[in-house]
Image 1: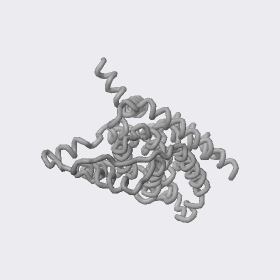
Image 2: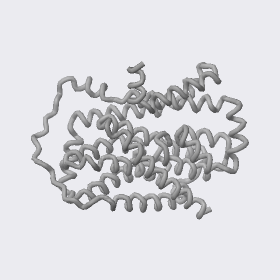
Image 3: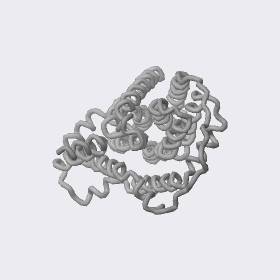
Image 4: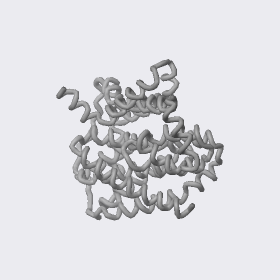
Length: 334
């Protein structure tokens, strides 16, 4: 029991996802359709990306980039702004998930090198928000927007203009928070020559992949697939969603994440613009509201497990503050 409890604490997101998926199986008898629920393209892509990141990490590529970066940075505020900006702009083109997989380890390494581990929780929280905001710029920036772009047939320009007000407000929010970081001078300490360990290289790469994260995705896909096949839930969805797409986009995202929420809501309503706004705002909030949130959390706690509780508090607080600001912006625009 002690071992099981320790595992639950260590892999709490995975454990909750599996428990919810198992509960849903009592309402929808397991069958071959379960395999259809799972977006295997997403799972395979994420696995390949994590492999690539592990290869880069074991080749010390991040170490080299960090050194080049730190040479050009004068103070802690500039460093945090740069680390957050990199995530924002990269998530426009390589998706929010990929951006965080690459640049959260990069940020933690950079802050560690300059002796500012105290800024890791704050910086990773801002990076995660930046990823969820940057992916609003183009429909290719995140899986949930790819889903909605495909279903709605909305043009790139219309998609951008629809979310532009929320992007502007969010960027102002991120910059304002960054100003709270002091301008303390930073300097790169004397560092030994980089040594690349080639022994058991492939073994280290494959062992470095976070397989529990992949299983978390699979469990969530099964959960949402079963919810769509439970009459009680479908009747509720039909009754409540139409006319309240933004509200339910936000609420559903907090519980099942915005990717399944996009698929769920678009199956019951054709008010695609409202759904797009709802699921993008809804990506902010709880840890599960966006798959990107899970990714940065998992990366952080693997390196600094002792930061787990503090990170959840800071991350959740900042996310809900911005969520309510954006929701207020929606009502003003409306």
